[in-house]
Amino acid sequence: MIIWLNGAFGAGKTTTAKELIALLPGSRVFDTEEVGIMLRHVLSSEKVRDFQDWQPWRGLVVTAAAQILDYVGGTLVMPQSVLVQQYWQEIRAGFDSAGIPLLHVVLHAERDELLRRIESDPIMPNSAWRLGDYDAARSWHRREAHVIDTTDLQPRQVAVRIAADAARTPRA
Image 1 (tube, rainbow, N blue to C red):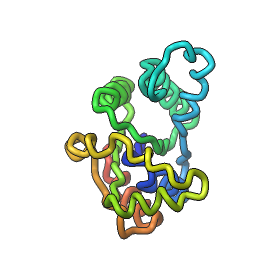
Image 2 (tube, helix red, strand yellow):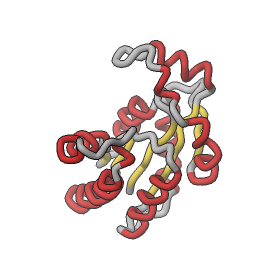
Image 3 (cartoon, rainbow, N blue to C red):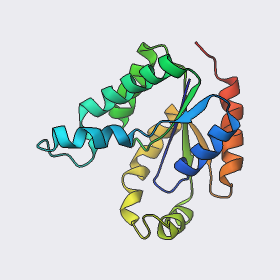
């Protein structure tokens, strides 16, 4: 199965992913940004705001995830903000076509907490651009995902909730 951790930058996706794989035997993190990095040298002439704007990124993420699961099985935890609904629909349709069970979780934190996390991030401090288009995506996120408010939760607590949801998700 795939557990896709979506939400604003700073909501805790990467940290939660690390906690989650510790709770789920046979799970591993698949960082889809690596697919974007791979495509940069090939598609650098195709100017985009974000690598997700390249259609091959969306298709390759689905194909790579399916190939990885075919090879090792288990659960892929994929922490990646997808804020464009059309892109999410393409990715979800690809997983559906491949018969891969999907748990789509949006990690949400209140704006003040997001700003605090972003400002104190040791790797990319003070990068408020990370709030991006999250506010616009919130309405469709509520319809298409299980939303967990991480404002007052530690990453381990969030991971425990997601692991419980994963246990209840039907497998193919």
